[in-house]
View 1: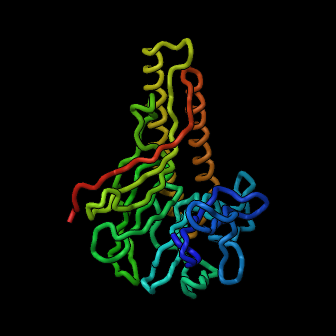
View 2: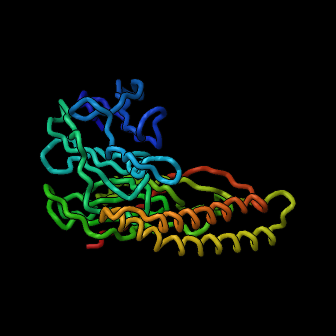
View 3: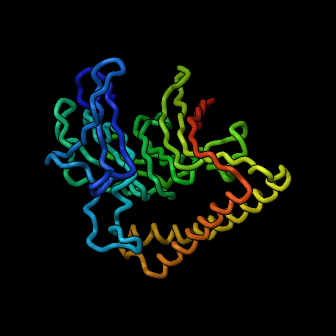
Length: 307
């Protein structure tokens, strides 16, 4: 998209972390024509400061990081005219569940993003919020798509108006993967998904491009195929059990964060316990399997409109 309105396509990029800084700042690589881009420069607010979703808390969590650090890292942005006034605004995701809106009080020729973003009323049910806004249902307003850490794609339909969106509860548009693929041949969309809607085949319907982070597993040398399949099945079942245990903990975590109650020591301990067990199960795969970390881009062609 042409962020600086100079007639050339630019690249906006979030990041997981920013060295020697407070969060994962958003940067812009200005296009100079064709595939020539300038070095990355920070996207700033109207005060000239780097965008930061929240002011960091003065209290730290068990890892020694500010309590709300997850709202400022792993940024994922979408430039869109959110309020229908004809200029670019910016909706930003993060490592957590929240979405933040930076409104543009200037114009596309002179962008002036708000110093303090507004947190949207909707939260993702899974962390790694990754917003993409588009008129998915064709009713003239913007709907909210998001990828998640769990994988798949979620949709929140706008039940408000074009200028004043109101978000419905997220529904699953593409289901998340439940097991790790054995090979590239049987791979399917995995976790940490990012989504973009576009009319890929020119038939007038929006299709979906979905990127992910995937782990391909294969038998370790000396491990028979039958042994690999059995141990893999047991490992997947144990991981599924832990994910089931994690779900109510995560739900309570979101509810407490939303209400401002704060995270209790007991809840934090439960979260760390399950997370540590999940890490142990994940690491146990190395006893019987080789793992290759990679990622894919998937195309979902839309065949019809659901009304």
